[in-house]
Length: 211
Image 1: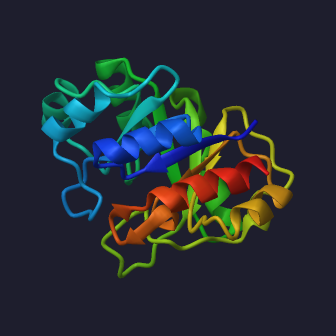
Image 2: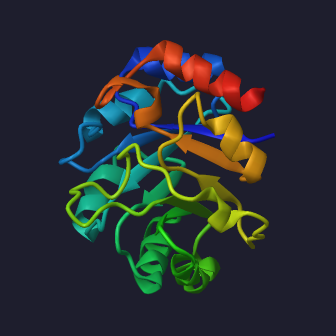
């Protein structure tokens, strides 16, 4: 069964909706420029409300040790998601320092982007494939943009992987007809306005995945 991650969660009511709807992961975004940013103290309170079976993911972009020390000292997510330009050695340093499983994001726009994954495989726990952002974008993810799913068609990976990038209740079934990811990751596709999650869209998205 495909697992589901709802990223950019900021409020207790959406935590409850996500759990009832059957997601496996919720993502807390710790990038201050993001409309989905959640303050570490709020994330700490939200993480205490997570029911058994719902795992938390802390999303960071090129974090410093100081930033990680500050946030992880209070929130303690189940996974760290690295969504920047972190090198394999930097990922290894973070994983060794904090002893938390790592999800590493990779932006795709062409076959050449797949070659970048191999050096990371020894040091990551999950692969996340997202659409490569435009050069003008300030955000490395959550832009509501998809990529050519056929780039991943028939591919096998040594680690579990998530599909992200522009997924919605309208297109996720089509994506799953082409690909067999271990999980799908959605953010903007379940929002009423940018950064604001919509309960009904979460239910509809998860129903579309399950169907």
